[in-house]
Amino acid sequence: MDLNKIKILIATGKLDEAVETTLAYAFSAGDKEFEESMVHFASRYNSFKKRITKGIKKNVETEEAILIKDFQATLETHFDPFDIDDWSEKIKEGKSETDSGKKTKVLFLSALPIDTVNLRIGDEYRNIKTRLKNSSTFELLNPELSLSAENLTLAMHQKPDILHFSGHGKLDGLLVQDRYEETIKIPPSALKRLFKRYKDTLDMIILNACYSADQAKALSELDIYCIGMSNAIEGDAAISFSAGLYSNMAGGAGFEDSFFNALFILETEHPGQAELPQLWYQGKIME
Image 1 (cartoon, helix red, strand yellow):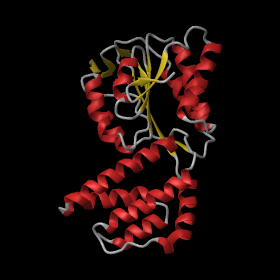
Image 2 (tube, rainbow, N blue to C red):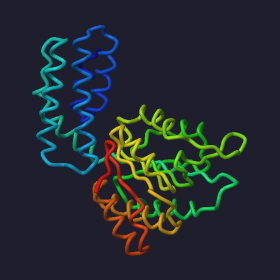
Image 3 (cartoon, rainbow, N blue to C red):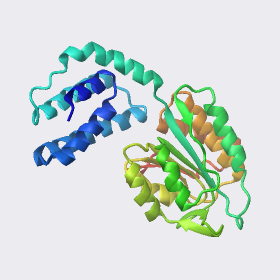
């Protein structure tokens, strides 16, 4: 492994890539102890990133500095002394440059099979687009507006941070169409199987569909924030909720604050509907 490359990645604030590169090497090097150490460190680092995404920013610089030192110590168990103290100023400069350009990527998905009731999916998408239009911290990816199981897998190649599904749901799955334009359900077990591969990059899943709370609960067990509906929700209420959610996130609020602020807006604009959206994390409902 090129240690100079790892130093440069750290110095330019690209700690994600440094950890991924080293972890990949650890798996191929045949040193079981080093592999276990890197897996443990990568888990700590991913937990650190998730806390930042959730808006928990207390002691971020201190904790990041500790992580970099621990990364150095982990590398020194396998290589010669790996001294990065001389790079401290470059690390600070690189971090500020990287942070200023990093955006949260949002992927909008929808499905409206031909034998289902029409929904105002276009209105919901335009509302979200409007809320994020002037944000310097969010990027709306190319949407998938006619979702099938196959093109869901292709859409995930964009590696979104937030995944938003708008459409119809049942207790046992989300309704999409197959290649023959027949209505089929994607069961929670299939969604969990897919999203398990993206759990380190996927921070939030929004299932803006009726009867999707149980699916949100199951997916939240992957350490991903998940929103689902406990019952059928009115179309206008669903649009109001998502608009409030993205407006708050674009304004700088964390996931939890954005969710509960969106409930306040929903209850004000559509009385009685605010009991339907539920936020889940690690298999537990957030209240």
